[in-house]
Amino acid sequence: MVEEGPWLSDEKRREIGELVCKGAESVGYKGLATFEFLRDANGEFYFLEVNPRVQVEHTVTELITGYNLVELGIRVAQGEELPLSQADISWRGHAIQCRLNAEDPKEFVPSPGRLWDCHFPSGFGIRCDTHAHPGYEMPGCFDSLLAKLLTWGHDREDAIRRMRTALDETQITGVQHLIPLHRRIMDENDFLNRDITIQYIENHQDLLG
Image (cartoon, rainbow, N blue to C red; front, side, top):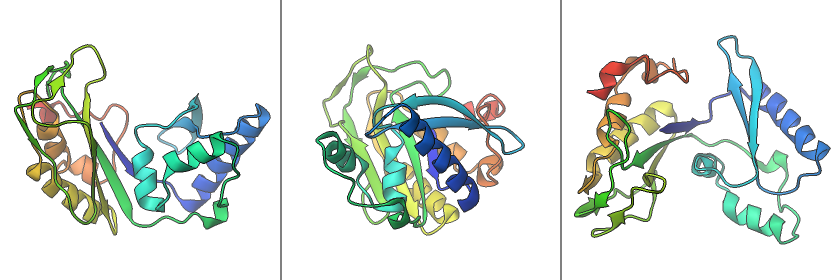
């Protein structure tokens, strides 16, 4: 539901990056892909899976690096060489993405229906990727993702403040959605203190209202 970055130290990111490159080279892979890992409480990483495609979270990387991953993926797929090296990549600020799914914010059951109205924020540090518009019929048989709302800030606190405002300015009527849940998460102490695990929602049932 919520993605953000950067999160790792430069040393750990470099370590994992080297492993990812070795893994891709070992199978002869060339193209856009995402290697996923899980990290335990001791900071150790464990390989999870590889997705040989663009991921929903790619927008976070784009905001903090300034590079269009979709464009780069297409250029590599048509036989071009990457026009940059790893040394050209630097991290700038912090980015947060909230998935605005058309779902019941308590049970996470899809909420199909017609959007009677919708308005998404814009401005400096705000990005919203969506296909939604007033009158759009949200189907019940496909992915419930309605929009990806992102904010960029000079640091994590700045990005969170901007996300609070962006969520408050977003209007969606006609279907249930996760905006109320996201808004509560942005004020929750463990989230603010970076004390987050894959059991975050299970351990914070009060957020479900």
